Length: 439
Image (tube, rainbow, N blue to C red; front, side, top):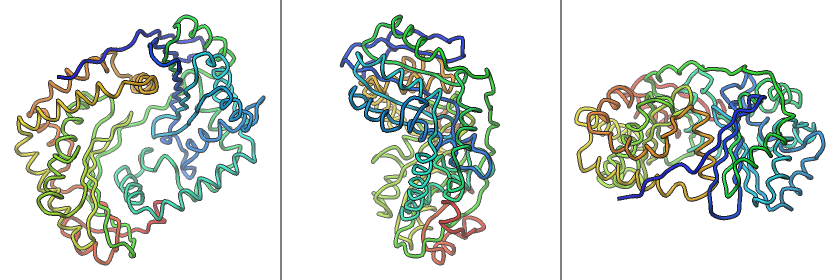
């Protein structure tokens, strides 16, 4: 029986600017983890500018009105701090770890790069060219190509329907002014959460944040609420990569938002179907038929909605067989649901994993920021185990019937179109696209 997990002592405050601050006092190593999350993810990329949110977040640390990018890097390194930035469909985030005694100085740097980045023209051009080159490199990675094609095919014209990294042809057109305008419009205190976790005094840390971020102002509100994405349409999309001897295969169905009441049942269902070596898909595809070394399934959930994914790979000539086996496994699950043995095993595994996932300040900072971003309840952590244990066979079966793959899922495969198109034709009308069309 795994131990439970409780939130550390928290102080939460919303500053006059609208900035939400969460401080968690937690004993342990004398480091502070800081995480800033801005609701300015890639879903806000304008049409023809896919990658703008990603490039804005990456360039924000490359210079402010008082420090160059090199000075920021050297200053943080001298303080023993490490910093990273990234974007997903819902948010841009900046994460930092530093010795507790360096917190006053690193918060000063963070306040500048979040509230007043300079976006130096030369740095923007360098980053843009690097990102375009990285996307070109992705064309050599069949699994990445398949994932990108799956996203595009599943979400279509919804704002989630492009990779957060953007598209090369769009990124190549971006200039400093585009980044500055996106930042001014979307990076606002009222849309931002700052989390500090570590062996810190909450009151002193809140006072420090008020001083450091007090000058950051912005128009209140302006949040963009996205409509839920429509369910993926049954279809077969083949990304033609004629040189491959193995095909990447994805089956995609509708999912749910991160804040959905179905989330816990989705975690359990995804684990039973494709969460490890003993999962149903792994047993059917690898152990029983030797079609692949791996097969996974999961619900991927965002703020507005999500998808159900099955991912695998196989020899080109057995791609159709793999799709049929996966569909048979899902059909069996829809009709019969999980066994009691599967439920006991997976619920125990998830509860144990949950307890082990909160051993660092960084993990807590990420979880607390996630709770703010998705509006999750205060018992998100302490109640996780009870929610997982409450998931029964009926809940899994109902979710599979409502959300997981139906009889005709969306199928995406990357490999030689000449062979894949004929094998996958029984699953629906086949549309062949190029890898470059999704890059």
